Length: 114
Length: 115
Image (cartoon, rainbow over all chains, first blue to last red; front, top):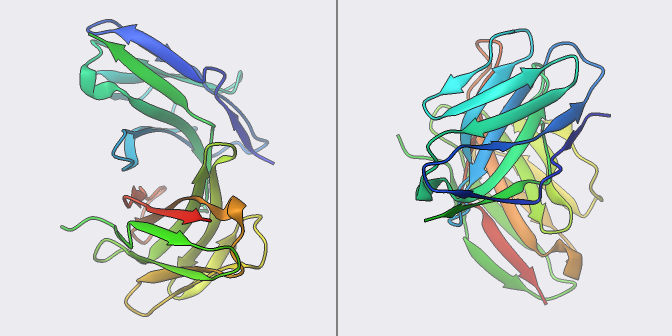
């Protein structure tokens, strides 16, 4: 069975600094998708970034980038130039291409310190 | 384009009652998935519907059921409510798979409290 593990329940970062959120996963599949979702206090889940497992190049979306290590089954999220609006729960997630079922990690609560 | 809408946003029920939650997907989306979010268990997949058929199901008891209508709107029903059913129920919709992946868009959720 596929699992997603986020080892950092909470993290804090100073505004304008860089922070990295960790995620590891377990799967026997070779083709899959990985995601980072953000859930602000308003509760609306938002997709931050997506990575296809067959792509070697790490995905980047503005200030958000990932470090995808397929062999190590690691998928970390780096947020550069942190802003107060980045404060939220961040969920690492996994999905197979044939499926809409998303498997989520437990989440990391990110605090931004002014 | 309007986003995914869920009604009601908040609900308080008593143990033993049943409840129905509604989800309206983004226009044109035919797949609807449901998730339960609790502080202890996190986000757990309940089920997915596509073209009125349940395509995938998570590991939840039979008290949890759902359905999808011809306009892609979906409902989930929980019968004989238990205290542990208190949670945020999230709905997500996606468009038909025309490529290798289809992004899921989440609704704001329904907060269910069972007393």
